[in-house]
Length: 298
Ligand code: ADP
Ligand code: ASP
Ligand code: MG
Image (cartoon, rainbow, N blue to C red):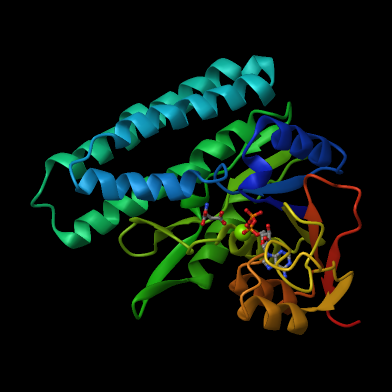
């Protein structure tokens, strides 16, 4: 079984979602697809949190634009028999969850700071919840999972870390009978092990979710599908002369990630390196390009 993670740009438009569909359709089953929020939506959800706290209700207009973006994507990519259900899911999360959260922030000036943080964490999780509903609806044999049911974090200094023990127990339970379908899970999102509050693995954390699931489920490979042809010698946005590195070791990849190569979120490497699972970095917009493979040794 392979784990295939698709980032924000890879799920951000009808064109890219159709590429995703073709790439996943060509895979043998079962397969586990881990998705990010539609490109830019996580930033929008957080910006709307700021606006709501300033009592700026124009965030509700932005929310309507996001609703339309998701509905348009559904019309463009979801199989016909699933469309009504996925449209309804998107509306339910927006109307019964996101809107009340934003209104609570906008109308409650005395909300304590720690409660604001909890509400914003619950809000930001919706990016992946909405995109994954669309992706699961693209496949006749789509099987939705909810990462809030098994990814567990605990506080660590000022941040949080994964609780491996509890996550392993819950992942093995949730994926116990992994049938032949296209299993779809959200990257990034989690819950606090003790309180059950919605948390996350940090910005860019969907790569890490995919690596954790690959390690716990003994996947044969982890594929990171993104918007560049592979892991490159530098960020091609700032270094137009950067070239793809065909093969790297885990240690080399870890060094470059730690030095700021944002193509892979740094904590991603350790869990797959520990299990000797090869990592491929591939381009959703150019799937026949060979990409990069990250392995134990050259
Ligand atoms: P995704 O949404 O798919 O997770 P990211 O934006 O997080 O994508 O990561 C992909 C981006 O990482 C590329 O568009 C590229 O600009 C940037 N990047 C930075 N350093 C590198 C590198 N060494 N190799 C490839 N891409 C890099
Ligand atoms: N959607 C989250 C973010 O934008 C996680 C991810 O894309 O990896 O940070
Ligand atoms: Mg990323």
